[in-house]
Length: 345
Image 1 (cartoon, rainbow, N blue to C red):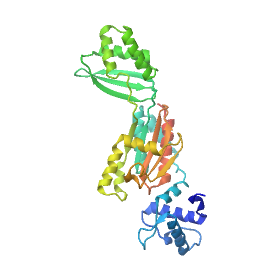
Image 2: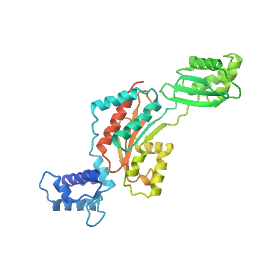
Image 3: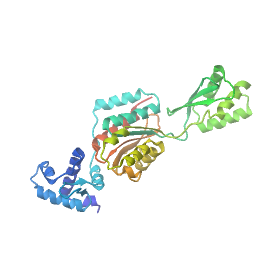
Image 4: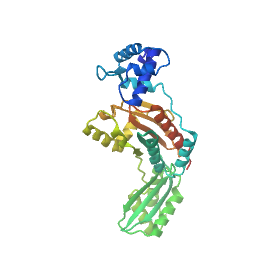
């Protein structure tokens, strides 16, 4: 039988009361505080004995002999399993959906989602779109710039847009670039990028699909990665500064290490991959993140994997202190995911 199952009803109620009070105040919780919050006539002495048992079992700890108790990571893990996501008002949910619908690229929606999560929870909001390997071409655009440079814009059917500026060894006129754009879009829109690259290379080697001057420019642009798509995730994080006001028991150097870690895209993706493993649509809560980074031992993550309206997978999460308002954060993640699912392009 699990430790949670072994907790009797009264002890479970006391433990939840201690955790709730600690989340609100951040101060050690005494038996009298718990007693005053109960409707029954359970005495402070009885509650003190229950809290002593919870200490023995690793759910509570006592910072000082005369102080109250504070919940441990084990207590928070028990507590979050009994929670359901808080509700976001219907008008707020609809406003969120409209706000995301007004944005016309995946990148913009991911960035805005992270900001919404930060605003709703006052913690750290994280959102990441995960491109799939078999992306399909929607269209390209080629814009001439000064000094023989060209802005190459690649849009795929999942509404990802990538920009790249390349320098050519010879100038390309606006007309030549327009001819190349029209040729690629007419012949390869809807193709998987890998297939389109291979077929375009075959045509350039075997055919004179365009007149020679334009074909030469097409070859130059192909060599510069004309149809290459960066499949690294689009990741945005907002609110890291909110961690500075928390009592995470970190030295100044450890806090700097934590903030530097959160600035690294790869570290954020590792964090999401490690703790958000369930199928799309399942809300996950993980308390104590020392496996990801030692400085994250007093943090918790609440998140979900979702498919955006474009079909692109995304991960949405709130990162905050173990002492956070979980129902509120769970509700924010759930509603943000629903908005991403339903917002149309």
